[in-house]
Structure formats: structure tokens, C-alpha cells
Amino acid sequence: MSYDLCALFSVVVFSLVHLFASKLQRLDRITHGRFLSAGGGVAISYVFIDLLPKLAKSDLVVRQALASVFPFSYFERHVYIMALLGFLLFFAVGQSRSLLHGKARFWLTIASYALFNFLVGYAVVDKDNPEVQPLLLFTIAIGLHYFTNDFSLSEDHGKVYSKLGKWLLIASLFLGWLAGSLFTLSETAIALVSAFIGGGVIMNVTRHELPKENPHSLASFLLFAFLYTCLLLTIG
Image (cartoon, rainbow, N blue to C red; front, side):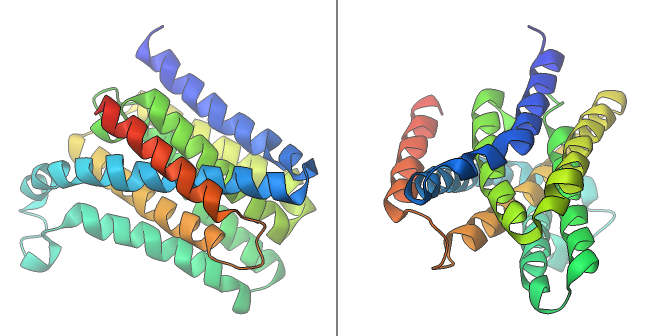
């Protein structure tokens, strides 16, 4: 199978998660909570053990490419600034429930996650992108992360997310994949995109796992973070 088809398959997997994640809510509260926490553990392990170390290596390339654009020392750590922006965006989305209500909050949330999905679809297309390789492990980590996101979005927005929101997120994935297929991806752009994705994953996992009222399992979170870490260290 060619890499282009593998990238498309990855996007299809992510889309299927959006389509069918709500089915897991039919499980009992404890089983559902364990599954969500397992997904969170895998996603956070991917960010800290796989993505961030690769971004550290990419940072030099990005700095050299953008030296003439941002010559000031404040902007030397470009990939980490992008990771921080991803973190802050989804922090703001999480806090918006106290500031926005109804349609305004829904559209802010969907727009933020649509941007995230577009960048994920964009990133997987480049076979030379170290931040998403090996693609199978990236697909597993982000796919499980989508399960936790969909649970939160379904709880917050109910039927409007099921009827409209998830379809917009699926469309964003394919639009990102299409953009990546049609336009040349620079190493600098890919590193910055991957950093933004990583920052978003960190915030989302943290936001989903911290609330005490969530039916989550600390044991499952820690166990799957440990197991996925071992897998990454074995392969890497």
C-alpha cells in the first residue's frame, strides 16, 4: 500500500471515531470511564515521549528557516510557541462555558476543533514528517484522543454536536488531507503544525482527566500511559 493511501486510511479512521464514539456511551459508567482514561493515557504518552523530543530536533531547522522573519531572541523557540498557542486555544475553549452560551459557545468550540482536525489531516500526508511517524502509532494515539474529545463534546452540546458538529469535524479532516495532498509541505510548516497539535492534545487530555465529576479511571490512565510509553521506547 502506498503512503498516500495509508495517510487517507488514517484520516478515515479518525472520521470513524467521530462517527461512532457516541456508541460507547451505552457502556456502563465504569467501563466507559476506563476506556476514556486509557485513551487519554495513550495520547499524553505520545506527546511527551514521541512528539516533544522530535520537536526539539526540528526546532533548529525552524529557527534557521525563520531567522530572517523573526530575528529577535524572544521568538527563537518557534515550535514551543506554537505548542503553547495550541494549549492556550483549547484552554480558552474550555473556559468559554462561563463567558459564552448556546450557539456562540458551540461555534467557538467547533471552529477550534475543526482547525485542530484540519492540521491533523494536513500533517499525516507528508511521509517525511517525523512528528507523525510511524503513522500507525500516531493514528492509534490521536484516534483514542478523539474518543475522549467526542465524549466531552457530546456531553456539552448534545444533539447539535451529533447532527452537525461531528460532520464539520470530519469534513475538516478530509479538507486538511486534501490540502496536504495538493500543496507542497515544507519541513518548517510541518514542524509548526505538529507543535500546535501537541499543545492542543496536552490541554485536552488535561481538561478531560482533571474534573472530579468525570467517570474516569486513574488506574487506566496510568496503565495505558505506561504501556504506550514502553511501546514507543521499544520501537524508538
